[in-house]
Image 1 (cartoon, rainbow, N blue to C red):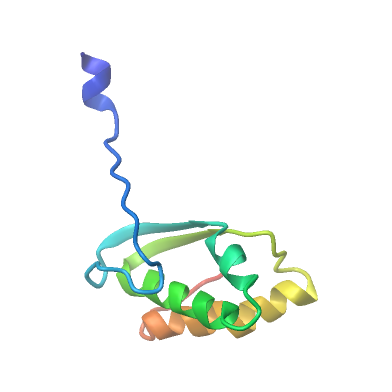
Image 2 (spheres, rainbow, N blue to C red; image 1 turned 45 degrees about the vertical axis):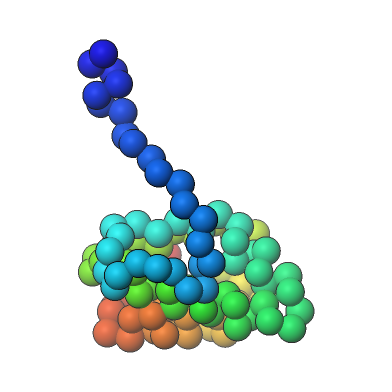
Length: 104
């Protein structure tokens, strides 16, 4: 019985990551595991969709929160640096232009 009381309760919901139904600054952590990679594979709308997803992630993230992105792109390559400049930075600023973003 004591083990069940100490377990974290997780609730899964399905939403469009480009238009999330949450209030501003509602979450401590936002995790993306492959969603941006999958969206980026769409040749026509991929970049715009990724920017929208990152903007929504930034919008719902509380001050001093974290966005963890697990991606196949390596930020130390030209392709990864381009992705950072063209998608990551505009997306984060689009969701919360007042924050001091650090990319590690």
